[in-house]
Length: 123
Image 1 (cartoon, one colour):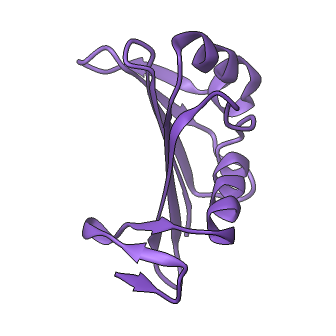
Image 2: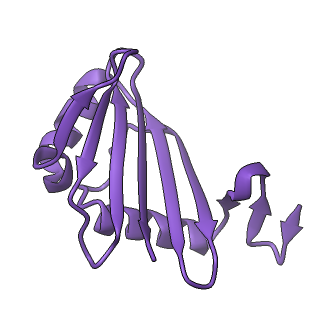
């Protein structure tokens, strides 16, 4: 469903952002998770939003080569300083100390598949 040309509502309370809201969501995610700019060579950049009057959550995902992702990790203070664990599927989970008064930030990165998903929210 398209609302005012700005947001498409999906299941599970997520929305795909369009136009200027997308750029704002990307900037907020980068600030809250203390990330470098998403790689220029990133493909399939997807931005989703969730929240209410009192909360806001963004989920940004993209795909890129392992080399591009590894370089981006090194350029991102939030990821460099994160507590990292390995998931059963071999992907890595980054528990990020959030910035800009955000309440939460994390990332799941699978270098084998070249997939990155970052979540950040404030409440």
